Length: 390
Image (cartoon, rainbow, N blue to C red; front, side, top):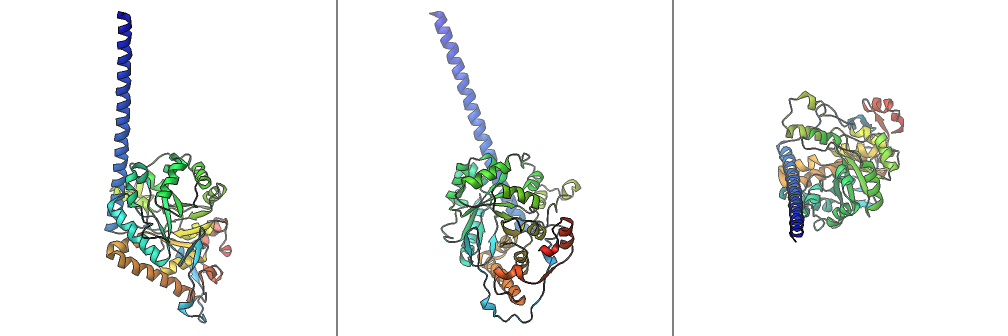
C-alpha cells in the first residue's frame, strides 16, 4: 500500500511538473508572439515616421529611365482627349496603366492611409497594393488596417506577404490573408537586402522558391512576385517563371532605397560598412529590359515620378507603372486632395507623351521610335541583351 501511494505521488509530481513546463512553454510562446507583434508594429511606425520626415531615395544610382529617349512627332494628327490609357493586367481592366504599390498596414495610421489611397485608386481606375500583411499573421485583429474593399469595390487590390513569411505559412493561412481583404492578387515581396540591414531582420532565406511555386499552384488568385527597390535580374526571373510565376514587379533601383530606410532607422548613416549597400541593385529600366521577353506581365516600379517616367517604362516592356513614395508624400503634404492632384498630373503626363510621339494608346507605346542611351545601352550590351531588342 505504501509503495502504491509513493508511486502515485511520484506520478502526480511528474504530471504537475509536466503541466508547469507546458504552461511555461505556452507562456513563452505568448511572450514571443507579443514581442513579434510589437516589433512589427514599431517597425511600421518607424517607416512611416521616416517618410513623413522626407524621401529616402537612392544616393547616386538612377532608374535609367532617363536613358529611354523618344523621337518626337510634330504631326500627331490626334486630340489629347482621344488618347486611350486603358490596359489590362492579370486579367483585370485598368482605366490608366498605374499601380500604387504596397505601402503599409498594421497600425491606425496605416488604416487611414490604405483606405484613402484605395478609394482614390477606385476613383481613377488604377491598382492599389496593400503593405505587408505580416502583422495580420501575428494578430488577426489587425485585419481592419488592411480592409479597403468597401471603399474600392471595383479596383484591382493586391494583398502582400514577405517571401520568408510565405515560406513559413501554410497555403491555407496565406489564402485566408487574401480572402479577408478580398484581394484580386497576392504580392510576395523579395527583400533580402532590406532584411540584412534590419537589426531584427531575417537572415535565413531558404525554401522561398518552393513556397512561391506552391502558392502559385494553391491560391485562387494571381501571384505577383515583387522586389522592394533592388530590382529583379533575368536569372532570377527565369527561375520564377519556371516555378509558374507569370506576374512580376521588378521594383528597381532609382526610387526609394529600403536599405537606406533601414540605415536611417538604425541611425547608421555614417557607417561605411552599411551605407555601401544604399544603392544596391538593378536600375528599374534595366530590370524591365532584362525580363520583358520572358512571357511575364511586368510592373515597373522604382523611380517612377512623372507621366514621362511611366511612359518610358511602358514603352520598354512594362504593362503597368508603379509608385508608392510620391503618393505617400502627397498624402502627407495635403491628404486625399493632394494625392488626387498628383495622380491626375501623372495621367496627364502619360497622355502628353503619347500625343507628342504620335501614339493614340498605351498599347502602341512599345512600337514608337526611340533611342536607348548610355548607361542603359552599355548595361544591356554587357548583359548580352542589346539595345536594339528593346
